[in-house]
Image 1: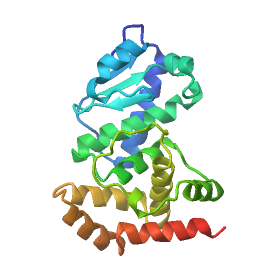
Image 2: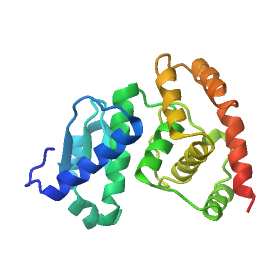
Image 3: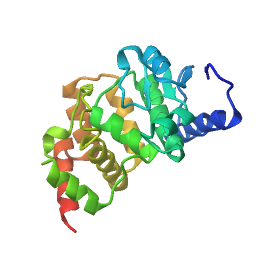
Length: 221
């Protein structure tokens, strides 16, 4: 962990917990990486480089390093509450594991949806989801496959809550291990053709067919 200020045990504990949680779920450890903690916008922008977004709390670079605002900085700008910091770092740590283990950023909906489940971010009730789906007219297009376009002018809505809860639906319907097994096989030949073929073979239906089921399930309230 790198920081221009003293690193206290609380900060170390946060990342140790995030690492342990991801290891317990993904069953493997990533290659060595750095965690760069920033206490002001200038440093955050400098360290994030091409990944800088003013709204972001943290990001994972191509070299698998995490760049994160410090808990004090997060609390200061009031984007999130300090008590949310652990879950946010659980989420970012999931991206480190994902990129290190699979060397991929796709499929976007699964990468972000799984990270949200590990971080317990954007998990919603059926009523909340029903309102989001109606407001944003959510349809199959939301299942983005390739690297996500970084356009967050309207925040994370509706993608993150929809992806997070769709992945949770798949976990409950199958298991998180099945999603991990899918990624291990697919990552060896990460083309759209193999993605569709492997997904249908493992889950019995295409991602879009299962997403339609998910939408119908949300409407049944």
